[in-house]
Length: 120
Image (cartoon, rainbow, N blue to C red; front, side):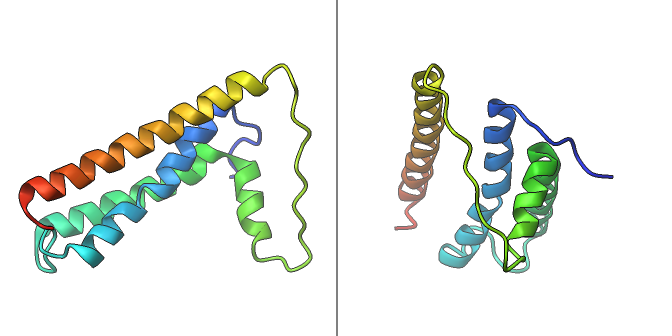
């Protein structure tokens, strides 16, 4: 069962967020282990949630992403980028900037929370 091929811009961005967000608990456990100690039940649930989020992201991103992921392991594979349309460049750039700004704000919030808790 292969997921659908073509996905829209919003679905692609949501899928990438789901694909990358499971990395956050890994860094928290590595650099701030006191937040999620080794024997805490929360650590198990955070890890299970991150794994589930990663698996869901593969289906949200669709079949074309699966092919891109598979091509990482094919030595002869080459990247081919489609031509951008001029009329959608400005709205696409604004959407991308909004996504990046959201991640920056979330990072700032995490840093502020860590500093407030006194872990720095």
